[in-house]
Image (cartoon, rainbow, N blue to C red; front, top):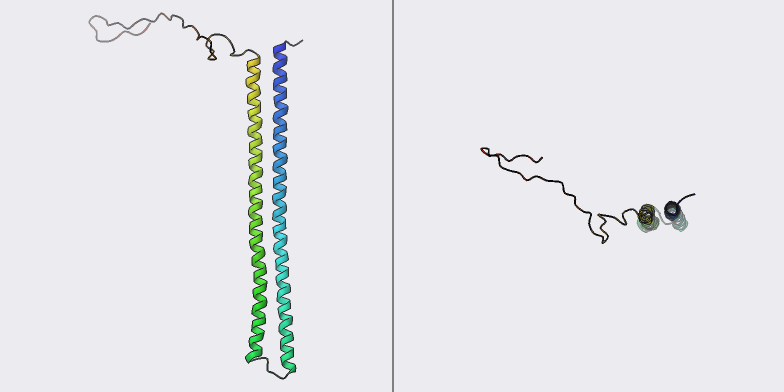
Amino acid sequence: MCDPVSLTLALTVGMAAMTANGQMQAADAAADAAEAQGQAIATQAGQEQDAANAQAERIRAAAKRQKAEATAAFSASGVSVDAGTPLKINEEITRGGELDALNTIISAGRQGDASITEAAGLGAKAAATRKAGQIQAASTLMQSGAQAATASGWRSSGPGFSGGQKPAPISDLSVRRPTMQSGSASISNFA
């Protein structure tokens, strides 16, 4: 049968190991959740950019239709579409459509950049959470080691313990003092 000190030591170490393992698992779960959220945000940013590009193409197509309708209306009324006001109107329709398309793409790009930055922040949070879990687990193990050592009586009594007890006695080492030899300027060595 185990003595009480060994049993206490084993239980302390076992409980600390379980606690440290739980801390690591909790940190990993939180980090995995942050990484998943970051990936979802990055994916959403890509989808939003794709949607903006598709919207820009729809805007350009609508501008082409509007330009064609204006050209048809001018032609039907007998006005030349290659010069003057009809030409300027067609150029303005093309310019306005392209401006709307580019603004759509730029806006989605800015929103996407913000989302990517947020995703990167979540990745950094995940790494920090894992590191904090490791540090917390190591701290738990170290604290339990100190508790186990104290429970076993190690360094809790006896000479030299700095916890308020008197210092260890110094034994006489029979130290010989250096002497001068007659006729010599050297000092003799310690014996």
